[in-house]
Length: 84
Image: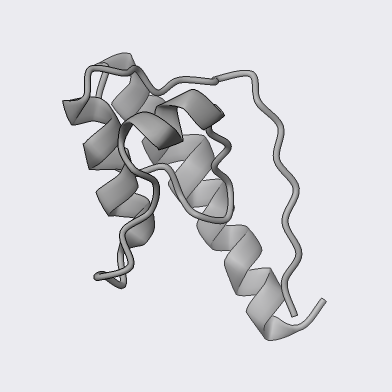
């Protein structure tokens, strides 16, 4: 792959496989990344979807979902992404 894809792969391995699993041990959710998130439609409707007034829409959506009392968890989920 290219340097960009190699660096992105490293970021995902460290950020998702290491840090997020550690946060999960304490029941903490930092953010559901936009490139790796999947949401139920009823949850998105309950929090009125993504905000158009921010550049951190994935973080804002995560916080809105948690504030609304929904849980965020799918430790066995598998996600694929593409990079240039």
